[in-house]
Image (cartoon, rainbow, N blue to C red):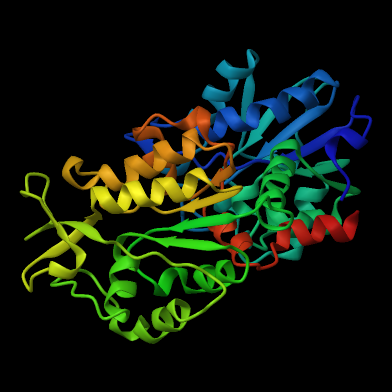
Length: 385
C-alpha cells in the first residue's frame, strides 16, 4: 500500500475517510474518542498545507433523506475545537469544496447519499472528483465495500492508507501474523452463533482460548456440566464439543461461577462450584477461583487478543470476572490488543485504557480481521498500491 506520508501534500486536495460515527444523546456527542483518534491524521495533512476534505458516516439514516438527528454538525463543531480552526460542514459538496492550503471541511453524513451502501460507481466517481489524493483512515468501516471506502479508492487519482488505519493493521498483524507465543485469546459475549467464525479461526491461531459470557455456558453444557436456566445455544453444542475435543488448543472451563435467579441490578448473587449449578440457577459471571486461574494464565502469555466480557459486567455483582481479567491483561508484559464495543466499555469502566497495548477503534472490521476475512477497503488500497 501507499501511505499518506509517501505524498507531497502541499496545495493538494486530500479527501480523508474517517470514522466519526460517535454516540449521540439528544443531539450532543456523548463520547468523542473516535474524533480524537482522527485528529492527528487531519492535523498532519493540514500542517503539510493540504486542502483537507473529511468524509464520514453517522448512524443509519435512510439514504436520500436528510435527517437532522444524523447530521454531522456537532462533529464539525467538536473537530473545530480540537483542531483550533474552523471546520465547515458542507452539504452541497457536488458543487465543489472551495478550500485554501491548510484549510479543512467536513462533508455532511455520506449515508444520506443514495448509492453509498451499494458502492455505486457514479457516487464513488463524484467523491473521487473532489480530490487529488484519497486517504482511507477509517478502520472501523474497512470491512464494508461502500462508495466512500472502496469505490472512491478505485477512481481517485491516488489512493493511500492513513496513519490510524496503518496502526490498526500493524497491531493486528503483530497479534496474529507474527505473534509472540503463547497466544491467548479471550472471546466473550452472549452467543456462539454470532462468533462462530471467530472461534474457529482463532482456534487455528492461538494456544489457549478463554470463553466467557453466554458462550461459556454453551461450552460448559457441551462438556456435560450443569448450567441450570443459563443462556445457552443447544444448536451450537456440536460445534463447542468439536472445539473442546481438539488436542492442539486449550479451552479452560469455569470451576466456579456466579449465579442468580434473575438478571437484575439488585439481584442477590451466589458463588458456587461449576459442577453444583442447580436447575433454577442462571450463570452471569465466572467465579473468583476461575478468574484467578485465568489471570495466572494471562501472566505467562506472549500475546493476548481480547473480544468480549466474561460476564454481565454492567452489574457490579457480576463484574468481578471481567475486572480481574482486565487488570491481569493490564499488568501482563504480553502484547495485548482489544476491540469491540462491550470490550472497550469494560476497559474504560475498570480504568485500564493506558495499559492495553492497542485498543482497536473498529468493531465489525476487528472481528472480520480476526476471522481471517479480507477487508475490501484494505484490499483495494493494496491493489492501487
